[in-house]
Length: 250
Image 1 (cartoon, rainbow, N blue to C red):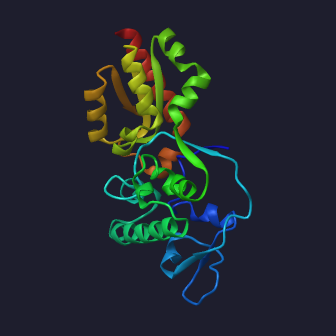
Image 2 (image 1 turned 90 degrees about the horizontal axis):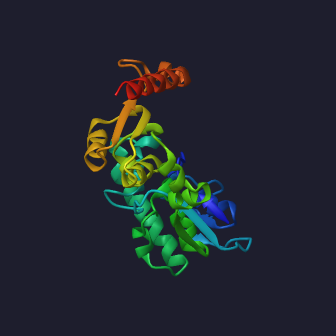
Image 3 (image 1 turned 135 degrees about the vertical axis):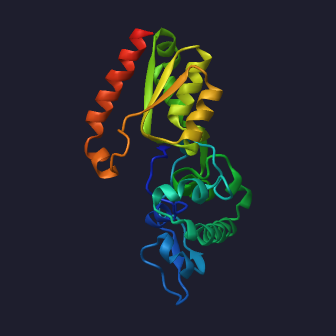
């Protein structure tokens, strides 16, 4: 199985996936918790059972190299994007560490798996699979690049356009647009990253690392989020036309 992780709305260490495959999480009352999610993690006292199906080898394709825990971990870096409030981060991190330790102990795996590059991707889904199944991480960008023969396409291009919803510091952890900017830099090709929103610190770092890279926010200033989402396609078309016109004038 090739599992592409990233762009998820989850941050559950893969527990929901593992529960669907047959693993059981037992609460304080000794009963199975029927639907496991972060809000009821504190009820978990032990793990029971095993996966109900035999899984083939799993390749977990991801671009980011974040570990599961710590200042670069799933909660600290991606939690706020998924609705985790600032005053919830510390307790969520502590529960994540507790559950991760419990999972590793149950399956007799080293807790060092929490530190594996990519274990923090997609809210820790890769971590959960890594503990329980025969799985390994593979670099998602390299995998897709080989399928698309991206290197030759970059070499033949005059200009490269890419982007994502929001460019922030998490984008610099190896996400697709960052990896493409790095590849364009090696080929000495100009690249423009378009995004709905761009954090200044991330843009500055991109420009420092890749002098041939420029960024362009498609959303007009002071535009409410609801309006920006509703007019996203139009804004993208307008900004793309604008940056291409600027390129032809250079």
